[in-house]
Length: 349
Image (tube, rainbow, N blue to C red; front, side, top):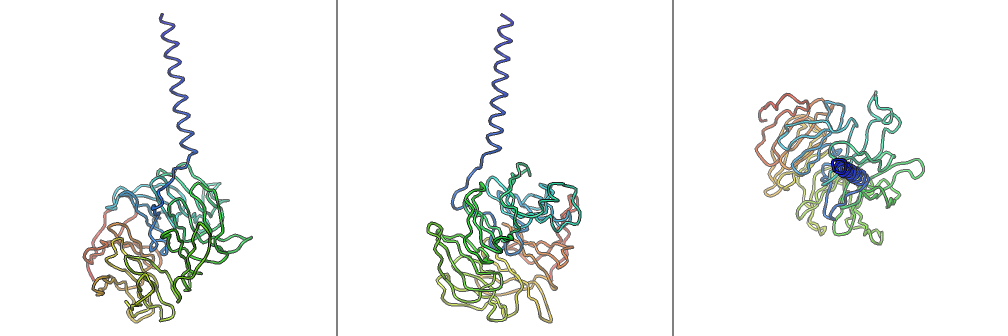
């Protein structure tokens, strides 16, 4: 009787272990797909290097204090933890995965043998930095996740620069344009993009037929759809900041100063922008309702990134990152990317 019980228990243990192993390996190799409405990061963040991205109350970011390695933290900028030793840019996050462009080619020394010979490309990993999947080994920029597709500006020796689409499981790779096109956004079954990053017309492609049309004529740099408008830097008018209605009417000058970069808060309340090439270079923001502007900080800054409640921006040498409440008062803090210190107020301008 006792031996029979032992055999039954042994059989149950074996079946349980087998079931656990089956579930593990099945889940490890399986791709979890998104709703069509899923967006991996905001267009404005991608233009600014895709260095910050928020998903489900967690911010994923490229940590300058650690050579750009992939980190995560809570939305209040606490609980900082490393996700990967990869230098990550153009970060996108959906409900299951993190996608990023690997920039290990800019790291002077790497102890990782695989990364040494695979320094660039697009990669997918789970939230804990495991189950790494190679999506593309070619250098790529302006990575954008929409639904179950990745769009990117990519380069390889055979094809040169091109606009490429790949499904999030790594299949159905397709070149959409054999130019250095920059993806803007996927809206209503159309992928919108500019011909390059220097200012061109805005084109759209319907992805079921792969037919291309020109939707906005002009010289658009870093166009962003927000609310009822399309915002952009106008290279035909001294790099001033403009917006037009989505139907292409009523172009409105917002900032009559040359702009090097900008971004829009998630609620669309403020546009943050860097004024360069003047006697008083500075970071400002403008209220999109009343079009009143105010100074944030004097000086030259870059890589303006937004999350749900934060705006981050950096000094030109990337030695200091600052943080401000996205839609609150102009109170700027130094953002510490190490694990121990807490932000220290530096006052208002």
